[in-house]
Length: 393
Image (cartoon, rainbow, N blue to C red; front, side, top):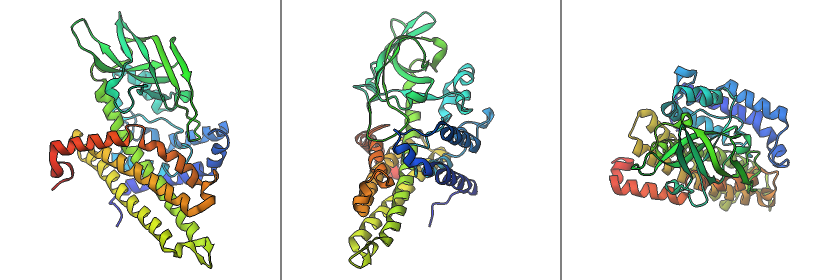
């Protein structure tokens, strides 16, 4: 039995699946063999269709023209988009609900609403050389200077920075002589003096979205660009992490589903020693383990989203987002490995989606909090709440 979804969620599922299958999948190899890039007219078409479908509006409130979809519906959408390699589904920005809670009217007008309309692109500058999963160790500072802040620091792995015109920058601020350090988020325009790209490293995947390293050297940012009060930055970052972890889990489920479909079809056609390899028990075992793990991961992911929609405690949702991200990302890596093995030599060809997923899914166990960090979050919640407090009696 499938997880119960509303008619609206099923309609969104079909729309997202059609977008992925008809518009994005046909260009995977083009991206793979052209450093992730698509012809400009193709990329513009993908971006336009995503906007027309309303994907950038899914999490935004209706009061500003958003769709305010249930988080479960949004997870269903991102699951279908996760079936595509080469990050082709990253053709648009999303305005997340926390932004409308954190930002004032002026900030919404200058940054968030244009992002919703596809007029601006964002990136997140949080990670540092010594502060990845542990974002409490951030060393980038924001020092008050009149009506401005001067930001100094270095940010690593700023995903999609090459496509963005502004950054969300997390920094440690000090407000007054007696105040202690506190975290804050800032809108920082990419063309601000003092932003210097130090490196643009190549990674194991072939994406048009890059992950450069930036130095911020005395970057002057007006007070009007601080998001919320000094000291609330970590709260907003955690909200961002919750959503990102959940949607990573959803995309991993979509990737695994496509991989299993590909492997099942191939195994029924590939004949060895007179019979399809799907008749061999070792192949059957790999397929059975894969579909079982996908079902478990999907249930966890959907339920974590449904908990949010039901308004359950934020701390508990935080734990379940970590559980979903941990299990789904590791599940998808195991499935990709099995599917490459089922395809044999064909599975190691870059033209095979299994090979691309094998490379691309690996990072999902690292970014937005490593698997090890997710285990710490989960264990601490268990020790504080007990089994029944985390997953029910």
